[in-house]
Amino acid sequence: MIRKLMVVSLLVLLLAASPIWAAENESGRLEITGVPEDVTAGRYDRQAGVFSADVTAIEGALVKVIFEEVEIVGQKMEWRTDDNYLIFTTGATLTKEDFTITGDTIEYFGDEDRLHAQGSVVVTTDDATVYADEMVYDEETDEAVFTGKVKVVFEDGVLEGEKFVMFLEKSELQFFGAFQGLFNTD
Image (cartoon, rainbow, N blue to C red; front, side, top):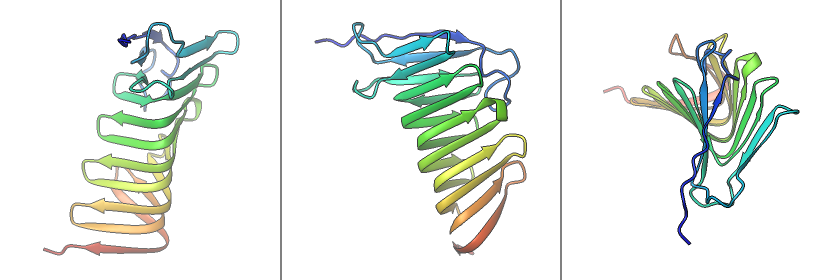
């Protein structure tokens, strides 16, 4: 059977309040790709204000939310429009101009300007790659807290510990508890 590509585009004005996603009153786009025409991949309950999509059983299919500077991709998603809560699971990736986050789960709390990634978290920036079990990013304080087997790989070194706080604007790290580092001094 030849799989037809089905793209469902839906203009949304829902997550516009947070700077991490988009400027105020800006629209976004939701796409579900790689789904045969005869397969139900998504559902929107207007009364509950919940959009959900699950393409985990369809090889190569993806759910994607795109805003001006941010793209989130995964295979399973729930979007509660009443409180701007969005969760992606199964192969979740968030890409913004200056970083990429992957994890088993990526949650966005729009009304709180907060992002939470959990399970095999990898954050890649121009300067470093951070591996952790969990990450919480607060837009207001511009800090990311990494916990659980954290490893920060820089061009000239590696840091490992249980908890690191990264202040993104300042390019500063704070370490809590025991940690170790290895640096190249050349």
